[in-house]
Length: 631
Image (cartoon, rainbow, N blue to C red):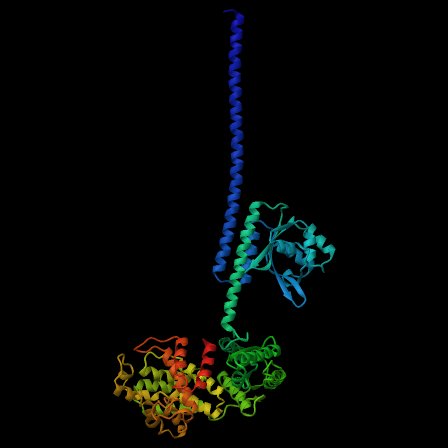
């Protein structure tokens, strides 16, 4: 082979090597570039996963808060701070759409606690959450709500100016120039198909990605759920403490609030007054015009109380046609002026069909008439009743507790019975009961009487619940007032309520607790307990002789089929009739050895069936109206 042939062969081989090296280099470069792209994509996907994880954690955080039943303002504050801190928004807030007599306005319910808002509020010299913001029909908020879509605007200054037109243009410009925010994203909020407000985020970006839109939509749904749950919770809470007919507070709330007011008054040594009001002639209104007009009269009283009450006063419907108002810091003189204003305003009301209505009102003052709240309630009640007895449509100021009250008579009676051993009672129990009467807890003799009466009942009826006697007493007294019984008769009823079943202590416990059907002889023996109470236990006590007939006849039926005397209708003392129906009701809703307790509604149905037979139909009607108010 010639020299040139060898040279060409070498050149060819070198070219092949160069070509192989070049091709390998290209392959390497392609692999390197692909690796760079993969690394970049992995980094982007990692960022997206981290962001998605943050969003999921934020949503989970909100869900946990809602399940914790935290107050709405607390949940919303945490929401806006979570999204602001975890997802990189510069500022977040939740704005509510409100309405008053002047029209629509906006208020900031919650806002994130960040540098941005602190700077803005320093410039405008007013916290945004204390401002009443303006609502404009051409604003981004109105457009987002009208179209039900998320909207983004870069006109931050114009948006701020639309809600706060009183802020000068110079201040608005200074806010915008010094802000890192490039846009505002507005998400309309709805709860129970009603427009509620807006969720706003101030972003450092001009663009709004699809993923971000999806997340903000989901996030807004969580806010809506929080608002809905909180709204439902508040409704349930309000229903638990308010009267459905009038919108006033109910007895439960009144009693709880009264405890707090007593504590405050004692701590500050500042009096407060209670106004007790009883609507006149409600029964006549119901009988003549129907219960719809009776309800109208009751609602009118409530409206008058609302309009005449100060913001710190508390008005409550106690049941039926009775109302109470607590006036913090008001002495008897001020309370009498307030009560007269209420009376006069009510008298001036003109109701459809019914015409004018009136009320009997009583006033008592804590720390002035007594430092015992039980006495104050009693005195208010007595003064109110005195107004009714003196002709109605008037205000009466309470008088101090009389030297001999019904409570003292009842305590003396129990002490007499226990001390003289007129009943077969274990000595240890007897001494314990006497100690409770002589040393009442919190110096409230009425509570001691209820406790003793319940404990005595439990000696022959172990299924009897402590506290029942107090409920019985309240119901019986409320019924007595419905029939305009005198104060003296009501006081006798109170004492009789405590003593009417005391004759059962003389009957063998095994007979009273028997689970199998009673024989005729056993039934007759049990029927003797009113006679035993009246003649064997109470007759020797001279100062309660006028109580004995009430107890002796508390098992007489309206149609004359009762016992022991088989008297009928008006021959039966009204106080005895009241004891019979109250006792029957509580017997039905308490368990017995031979049956389970009934529900209040079931008990009422049984009582209805015996109207006109076992008890006076008018009494049944008033009884049911009282029970319906509580169940």
